[in-house]
Image (tube, rainbow, N blue to C red; front, side, top):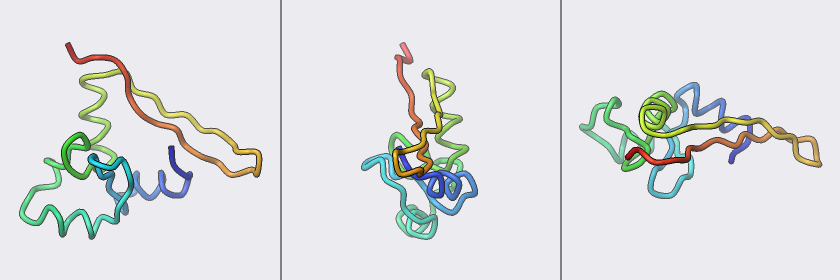
Length: 87
């Protein structure tokens, strides 16, 4: 779950998803950590995922979801993830 702003920044390629902590980091920080690793290898389950890489990986193996919610204070948050088994 994240703010609408974080989710949009992830979709725009400004953030990457740290698959180890499930927290967003800047694309620059991800690139520094993955120096020499091509972006198409940024798989969220084991490194730092771009929006496209994360969803490509997840949608091939699991059921995924993405839902918008409004908090009592009027803030829009995005819940996203996956479930199921790839067996």
